Length: 32
Image (tube, rainbow, N blue to C red; front, side, top):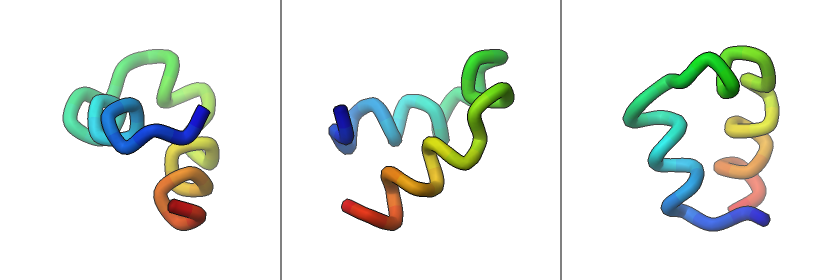
């Protein structure tokens, strides 16, 4: 958990799941 591909996917295509957990993407991107 914490791959650049996953982060990019959410940022490139904001799906309904990402909207439910927006901090998850930001946290992963900042940590990586």
